[in-house]
Length: 187
Image (cartoon, rainbow, N blue to C red; front, side, top):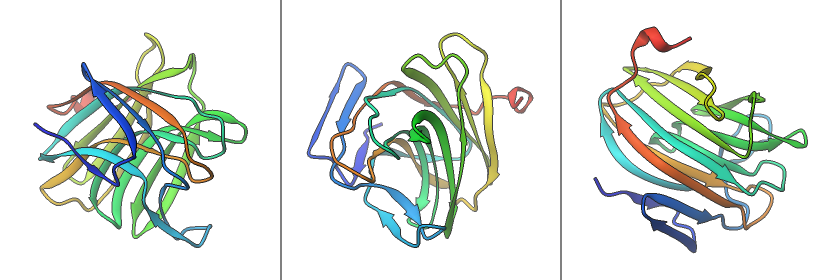
């Protein structure tokens, strides 16, 4: 299935299944909460997916600046979406997950064994979404289980943004979308 951009960056390439994208100036996805602004100009390379699924990718980026982000996104529209990825917060790279239901919320967590790249997966089970990550060959770690009011078909793909600068270079490899993981593997 072919993928398309929402807010295509000026500098990007797709070679042998590896996407490299460089963020534009002050790009982000966020709605209202705490900061008081709504921004929908981050970069999102996506495809439509109908029904339940698991999307996976290996993510890395040259994070240097607060809020630099690279990861996965599930999007039903401007006010209903999930993004999860590597993000610089509190001076270190962590994993952030944002659920947006008109207003954005965010959770942050460090990842054991993080060595510069991270395997990520997002799964949809009806109106529920989960986020798992793992570094190296460690077990999958559940970061988030949440509710989103999703239509049958949503856009699923790779997201990057840099709210305080331009020039974050993000790399995504081995992106796949397939059947959802077993509910028994949510731990």
